[in-house]
Length: 153
Image (cartoon, rainbow, N blue to C red; front, top):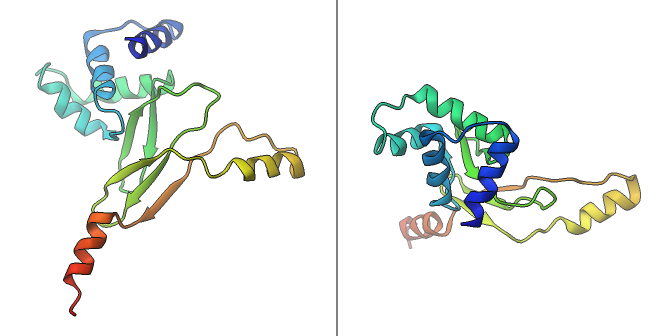
């Protein structure tokens, strides 16, 4: 699995061992692409295999994996840090997110709409964008349908 070997390489470059707990946490994220897990959710999943793993171990591990650029931390204004696996090349832009303000569902959006703006910033201001993050807040299709069905005719 090429993805896992890339992750192992980043651990080695950071001079960190691959403990069973770290490996399990990495696999949790690899097995759940597109999911944005909080440390608490990771802890619940890890405890299914390692009953004695504490929350502090999970926090330290996600912090380390974020520092090594294996995980990416994202905040969706719900008061919790969430994490996703970072498999994108260092010079590529991140994907974007659509966040439902009713049910907190998060969907990924792959199309990059900001290329022209980045070109303009470089051309007009000499500012070379290395990366950006874009989040759209609104209502998802399911919540919008529920709201439409509840309106009196």
